[in-house]
Length: 292
Image (cartoon, rainbow, N blue to C red):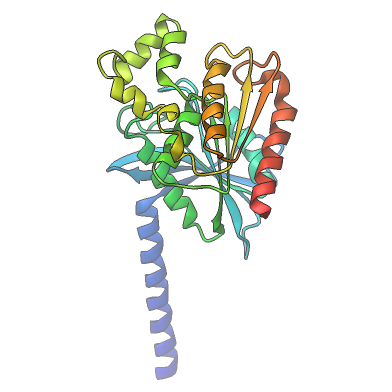
């Protein structure tokens, strides 16, 4: 009788400890399953996450292969474009990111503070870089992630965020930037009145706050690029002119950094007519550097 009583007591203690650990993890990052109609629904799980960053509760997503038992996958950090609700991660982006999870990556992505239900306010390359850094730290600790294998992909404004991630000392096996901002002064000058007003509202007037624009512009600190970099750009991009990429390319060449620059003839901002080609480039770039 004493033996069975001991077993019952031990079972209660173990279950209690398990519950405590689970609750602590849940208090830190909340995960909610997302059910999305997708070609990858049978192979990929999607979760909306709420995680802490600078005392704020920030929204993001985790996409992972269903088969995670005794597996270690590379971490893929995706940085979205746009500002505020424009460009936030919706079903279309989740389907796209599911294709990368289907290839064998654990994908993490953030809406950034002030966006998509996150607390705080949009800062467009200010303190919101902490939302990326904190997400990476969490992603690296997932038990089915290989913390020694990490890649990043930034699109448009997300390209700027990816450069800022490297500026903050995070290095990757490989980085891809598609149609990314490298010079915020040029970006401001070449955009229309509506986007200029958005930038003044969020970042400030570049004539009044030039340091804010410099701190967000990799062309002023390109020595901080610390990872093999693939730059994808269209020569008909009306939002981020291709000369932005080429200014950075000239600096990378001078500094003998590892990079590849692909300019797509007639390519627009999202490289709409080159979907298969640019994704093949990304896949090759990641695979090449993850193997080494």
